[in-house]
Length: 114
Length: 114
Image (cartoon, rainbow over all chains, first blue to last red; front, side):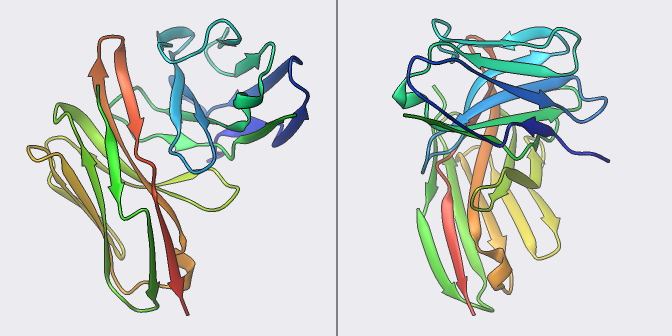
């Protein structure tokens, strides 16, 4: 069974530029999550999708971050414009149905904002 | 607001020792608790998932227990090996004012010395 795929693996941009990350969850998983992990900390949930609907985006900085999952499968997370403090690893995870199910994580995208 | 802590922050042990990692959470109304392993520069690998109705789960040399009423979980690793060196994170799934919520601890960085 293929795992969660993410791209790119690494991205370096200058502040005020835009960036987008892509995630393809495990086939058949209805729930998709985006997390931000700052060095030395645990991941922080940014947004959770159930199929193509948003379940929770309370911790997403909506003035600069956006995410979509139009067809209920792949998802993109965008940052526009980026700030220095956005430097982190962005992790995508999926689970079969929701809160009671095991989460499976992708390898992450390491973003450096200069 | 749910808060998750992990003690110790870092641990170094000689190969072959049995060890215990601790995870504490402030709100006992959780759906489940999951333990993960994270290798440097990699995503998270799920180790064990304990539902709120369960008291423990076992997988190979790993045993995780859950005491929901006291807000604690422990991860026991038997006969540690150098390959167990990684950061171990726990995460709880619960519900807040915005919906489903997933909160991670900061992790315990484990080094097993040959």
